[in-house]
Image (tube, rainbow, N blue to C red; front, side):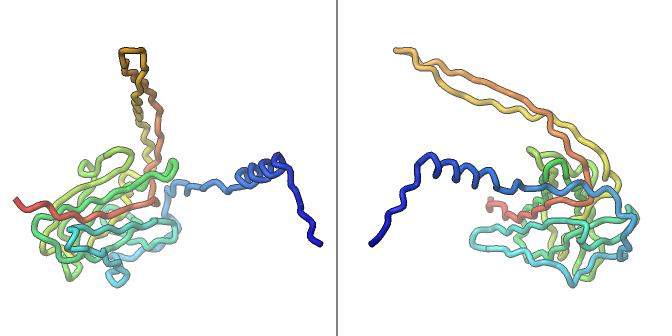
Amino acid sequence: MSIALRIPRVLVLSLALMTVGCATPRVEPPPLLSLSNRRCEANPNWAAASTIAYDPSKHRGDASAEITSASACFEDAVGQSLYAVYRLPSLPATSLVRVESTPQGQTLMAPRVLLYGPHGRLKRQLSGSRVVFRGSALSVIFRSHADERYLVVASDPAVVGHAIARIRDAVQGSAIYAYPYIVPVYTGADATVKNVLSYNGRVTVALRALPAE
């Protein structure tokens, strides 16, 4: 003999709501504002370089990293920096590299980009005014050079600790139907977004070949 168990729909709904309510919210990392307890190397560790997978058929490659308090660090004339290092593939002469730091709550890594030759000699450093906001991310865009083999995304100690407040605007459009007319209606709102430039954060690297002229 089988017994059918009937559960009231109200109880099922209540259990479902309890399950949703128990979901763990994502905890964003707090800004890391000091490396005083770290002993850093004089140069990035080239042996730890990650390879950026580049697809020649699509003319693109992408990589990302989470820079945390446990990440490797080096110290140069600018100061101590946490970093991620990448080995650049052979790129077409007309290629763009985009490096971005994206917010994690209030935390926003203050990035600088260092490019090295095959033997670890510094070729270029992009920082300061070259790093600008594009949307909510701090980014720098530049053309690749044939003699550059390593790309280092490092925190910029010159600006770590600076607080940035920006106003983000949003506009939405809708339509009101009043036969025989359609009236467009636009509404907008703005919010103040606050970030603290830090040693840690989320970074991405994108390689893109420009179309041939």
